[in-house]
Amino acid sequence: MKKLLGLTAASMLLLAGCGGATLEGDNAESVAVEEKEASELVVGASISTLNNPFFVSLEAGITGLAEENGTKIITVDAQDDTAKQTNDVDDLIQQGVDVLLINPVDSAAIAPAVEAANSAGIPVITIDRSSDGGEVVTLVASDNAAGGELAAEYIIELSGEGANTVQLEGVPGASATRERGEGFTKIAEESLNLLDSQTANFDRAEGLTVMENMLQAHADIQAVFAQNDEMALGAIEAIEAAGLTGKIQVVGFDGTEDGMNAVEEGKMSATVAQQPEEMGKLALQAAYDFFAGKEVDKYIPSPLELVKK
Image (cartoon, rainbow, N blue to C red; front, side, top):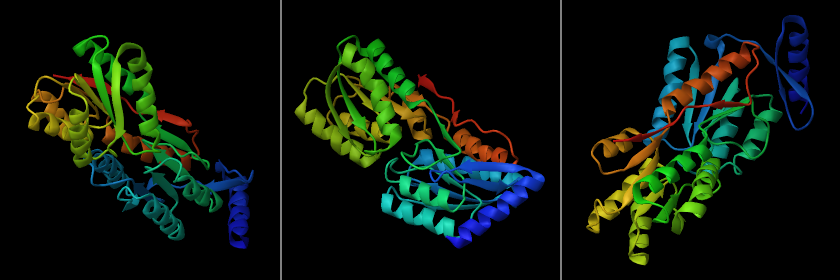
């Protein structure tokens, strides 16, 4: 604690002399951050999983912009494990990174790690998913609720009012899961017949298994909304194996390369496309702006669009 207070006091003296940015923590102390050039920064990037093409692209956006600016990036892969992500972030804090870019596995589970970074005076930027606790400089994300609404509205356009629909949900506790589900069900409850909604953890293999079970339980499914393209692609495999190709519409989310290819081939009806590489760039740029003493918005939207053949 003495070390933290000493660092904070020294930083505040520096702030008074030459200008800087501040991070407000839950303890009501203002932690001053020394202004730095992009080439001076060491950035810790904690990614929920690098076994998903979406997050591979997100990480590529971060590292690509970092290479252009001479920024050192330390990337860690949480492998969709909340305990591992907490340990990873603790390790990055111990390494003394200047800023943390965190793509949470779970928005609630990441909160203690964010609070630990706050206590260490390390600013945090969250990407794609928020943190339920602690203070962050900004959240860089698409409007997931609006994307869920887009998906529901397109299913209505394809299959009509009252169409028998099922939903494959993402990782429980992730803000993206909550928000996409809220947006989708807001429309579905009024205009679709939602037969079933189960988690498949944003995973293709689980999407296949869950869809197989849904097909056995419901003989009259007309449409599927999968909260990411990986689950959508798994659902398509199950639909093809059941001999129902062309009879069930599938709408995904993310706009991954595999998802976009499936749309082009007519296997997937549409995907709500995010731009993960751009999202990664926006997050690192927010860090650059913060360390340049610029004001950073608490929420930075990343664009999305409905992509159909």
